[in-house]
Amino acid sequence: MMIRSAGGDTFVMANYLPVCLDPTVWIWLTSLREKLVTSWGDLNRKLIESFQATCNRSGNHFDLTRIKQKSNKPLRDYIKRFCAKETEISNVLD
Image: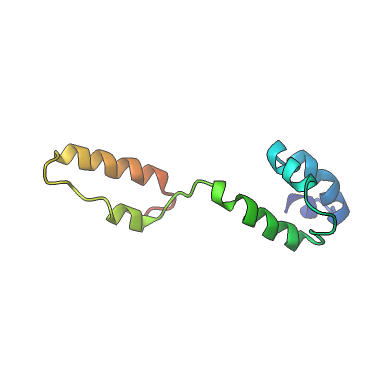
């Protein structure tokens, strides 16, 4: 973490946290019951539980294997769909 590498401790991280958060996340965080989050690990778990479903997932190479050429469609359509999916996926090996 950048704050730790600059010599900051957990108190510095806690003070800097509101600056880093999206307003939606800040509202969620300030609405939590008192003492529900008592450590950075708790905060990490709660954030993942609450916001993981809102993240776009890039997919993986198996998603490319699911793209099939349809018998009644031109090859060009298949290639277009394949390339569009490939651009969504990070770290695809040729």
